[in-house]
Length: 469
Image (cartoon, rainbow, N blue to C red; front, side, top):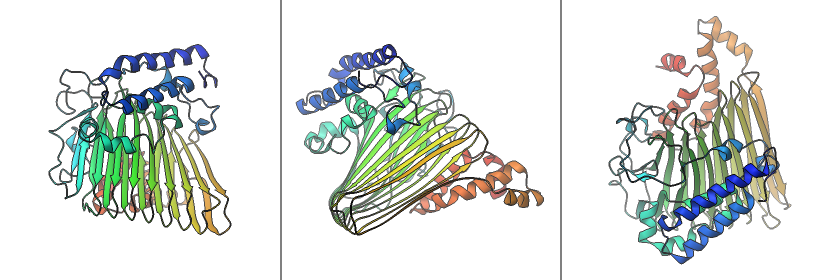
């Protein structure tokens, strides 16, 4: 075992690795694509990589501020979805989803956009709606897409997000048995965003889920995809997500992610996008729920005139811990990247932001800008921010900056003096801090529901909602 130290005993780390190895050996014959020799090799190599590394510890620089020991110590059920019918949220299942009393009430699409819904690792055809897909765009759940077009997966799967990159990516690659595949043929244009909804915790078991999401846009295609993660209140589970995005020449992909995991849940996600010449990728990520969440976002600008924009908002209330790590690789010249992230921490919450921009020696005429701003709402809240620029080219325009502050006491006094309750006044100022990230969302149809989700997670958000209405 390579990563044993960092405050936990080798015996515990070895036992954890052995538990996952035993589960993989038990499940491998039933995993999707087991009859494909190349996929068996990929899965086994990933399982071996995890066995060698184990879970990361704070000794690993990339995990310095995020201790995943609570995940390691949990004996998550790794045996996949059971054969017995599950209880759909809002239909006999205990607990409620954030934003609504039932599943459909918590969706961001209002019920009209194309939507694929996976509940506890299994496709739910009744909640899904794929009738409105435009020509040239296909959306399928992961097992079905793998069965239908194995050659497509062999050329792409695990080639963007390398399994050995992180322990969690290795685990996902070994166990991936659910997820979604979105493909846009060359020249296809999707006016409405495709919604991928993952609901966890309905079965009542402490499950570990391994969704694999693949998004491929052909040359000149235009597509938007929403990843929405929901969890039932009180449910303990792990969503270990990997998203691979391939953007062909002159194609454009908009990617939206809203994480509303249950308060007792764990959410670890890796997203990596590969851009061809003239391609563009825009990411908006909002992290609201979960006891512990980690988001790794990597973009590689391999060819000239590629560009990316990464925006995000993370909130940590109570004892929540949320971590964003971004990495932009400027490999080719004449490329541009822009990052804008904001964080809010209250109670004993902790936020982490680490943003790295790497300009390679031949990446002349690069333009890269990064901004991270943070707000602390209490004495015990903490946010760690680390913007990084690594520049190995001469002719570039690059900048970065980070701030951490508190609410303006004069503004708070101004609102209180006009009869606004303190909790509502704090909520107004906090929402004002967060709102510009929401306003940067390109699609008006998503701004409203995402803004409402943010408002619902703010301290004093209930009082503020009444004022705004």
